[in-house]
Length: 125
Image (tube, one colour):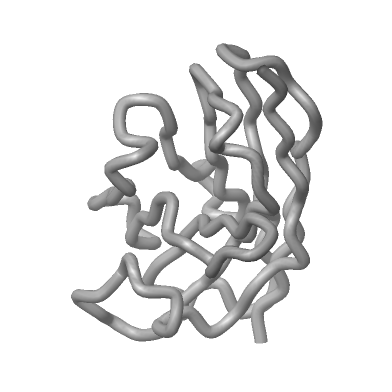
């Protein structure tokens, strides 16, 4: 089992920055990938960013490319999402996710086995 706890959400003005954290505990050594997804009211949960647990590869949604950065600490216990140049359309609940198995569909939410509880990000215009 793997437990994920997000933090760092909040309210910020457009153009501002936030850094989300996802603290992972449990059998993290068996993980293949970590991802961030977001969900706005009335919309489906959508992919934001992901990385292989080794840190070798990162992936981003087109809507956040160049503004958001996914990374992890050297101890491999915390994954971060640095969000810069935030826009009102980035407003959502952000979820951290972990996947156990190798996959070429790392941007697909169904390949992830564990999820955090989510943290709210609100960007005002």
